[in-house]
Length: 351
Image (cartoon, rainbow, N blue to C red):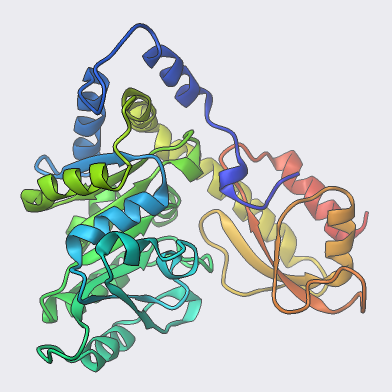
């Protein structure tokens, strides 16, 4: 009973079948296979961006770091929320791949930046002074690390602030599909139509074995990203296995159906949690992850029965005052079932 992460979920059968099909015979390496061409075209069609530069990698960290490496120069700041994934969970990869660009941390509730906070942070960096880090791109995480979702007008407002200063906007889309399912929007509406310049289009958390797409809507940096991907060790020799995953992921809307399933189970979980004594949400649940405070006793019962998920805060001990609230994160992947959700809720209830 694993609610720790959508990374813990299995690959979708359609993805596995595509990889097996791609395994027949030989194919030219390093992205020169015909499957790659089909995958790139499907991504361009999905984003309604026929001129987009598209590059496949195997991890979200590589996708974010490589995208930012062509948006930020080594002496620039990358503006992101204090709890952004690139700050909290990527071990300095953006700084490493950009050659030293500095993350400038911005505040905001739900791990979402506000336009006012972003403008203040950009102003604080000044600009033109040789002794200071210069202003660079803005990066937002969608869905955020606290489970909040940027609405389209919020993305547009942040883009407007970035444009005031001549800066570009990057979207970390590890849970891109879940956000689209929540907002009921198209990929184009959540990216370039809202002012996003580059996006990491995630597949790994949503039913793929391991593939992410760096999509940049301006072709001018395409060759640079190709070189950086190779130099950084992320150009797969047997690229067809990445291509096959991505092509299957997009075919017939699989990417969205998987996300809708995960979101639906999460909504069911959130509804059940509302009725539990002592339960309180850190953020109103949206997408496929929930942050909720539950009494220590509820966590002790669930984990003793084999439930897996993460606890947060200084006090994570399962022995002590049974009524003490402890924050946890619960994540539903595409394969999560109603039976699994109800089993976890029963453990929390103690029935």
